[in-house]
Image 1 (tube, rainbow over the protein chains, first blue to last red):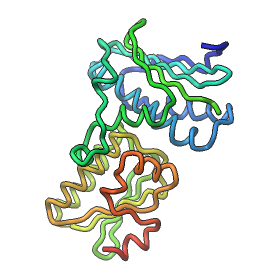
Image 2 (image 1 turned 180 degrees about the vertical axis):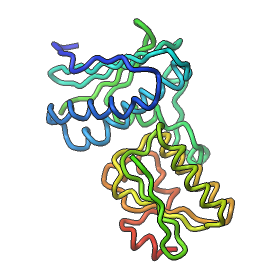
Image 3 (image 1 turned 90 degrees about the vertical axis):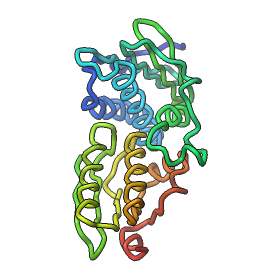
Image 4 (image 1 turned 90 degrees about the horizontal axis):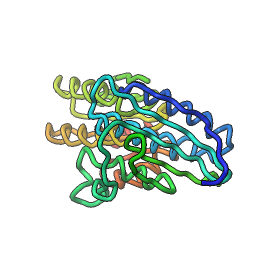
Length: 140
Length: 110
């Protein structure tokens, strides 16, 4: 990763009620970086919201007492979010399904990872201090 | 974020103010299902005051549409801004819902 600075580094309780506040903070950073309006109002809010809800509901398995760490890192070229939960991790490729097929279109679930991948330039998952999902969006 | 429900002739109109996301989707679902249980059949969700929608919010719309159809009713959508339109196109949900660009056109379409 190129030279970088941390825009924010938060630990939030594992509760979906905290998602909107984190997303609003991320949107503010996007506006300060003068990202395009669509990146500020669509790409970042939806992809970050998906990653956070995935960490809270699946990674931490809705278990009280756990936390999610969310870090925003700004490089010369990218805005990067790292979302860390306390779960065992998962294989991104195994979890993604094409929600646009005739069979899946009318299902209630299964669009989260699909949206993250369509709205971000890169989505990675790996083990570090916990299970990390890293979302990378090019600034230009 | 909140949901307000009004009746316009035979159509139940729901305004989504703010986000439709994992934290509040159940509230929307319950409000619409309550109206369905009362015997209402025609539903319009207006997104003119909506910020963003996540996959849980989209999922609730799909689920409600199915439940309303099962009761012989119909759910239509109106006033998607450019971002929301993109979201529906990405997920191809624009092919599943009847979407109008204004509330008036949506109401006329029932």
